[in-house]
Length: 334
Image (cartoon, rainbow, N blue to C red):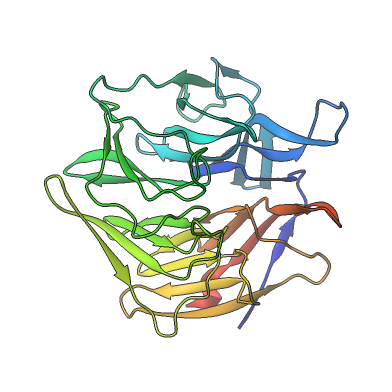
């Protein structure tokens, strides 16, 4: 199967950013690595800006949020941005400000007024009884509700000590209490994808401590008070081992986009969770080469999959950025 890809020619050249969908349907994009607006020695750098992407009656609009108050994380890459508070705020954790400097703080970006472009950064002060968590990057952070409480689950990632962590943490967004779960990943995992579904988390792919792509998928769910179950999800044939995928969910289906593996594999992997089967699809654009690595994706109304950013760097060929924002109509997949 081949899906046609639409390219929106907006100035958006970056990867390693964080993004999430707010309650009004807009997408907030934070940081990453891309074309620098500061000039200087190199044309590319880590970024500290906040962008907002929105589809209205006149089409797609991308703007920089200049009316942002407070002190945020600064330049950042390989962090996560997670929608919390019913999509009215953005939780930012992890990432690196430089190769040797992990971000050790957590932040929230809130709208000053509903449906406005006025936002404010605030640093989170954790509950005094919180667990101690190593600063990490290339992790995942997803929001779910447990016993009528909103929590963020932080899974795996890399840190200064090891390239692939096994830890899973739960952060309560009301009390800001951070707890380490009693379950952990069976193997270290970073650069994986994770999506909230069926009141739990589906964890797919990634890279292990030997820097090899992972094929396995796991499902994390809450069963009883303070009891979490982590179980493997088996597919036949197994999903191709890849890292740096991005995930979106619609009903009983999880869509994995892009990623990097040791062998050629589909651009899109569509998983049917109920039947435990999957199929692959390729994407096509007649003019541009699209590199779906270190990107993010979101499924919006009308089954439109939005692919943000992506690219990579190579000692031989230099740095490549996708030249715009991509969309795919996923109705043809089901």
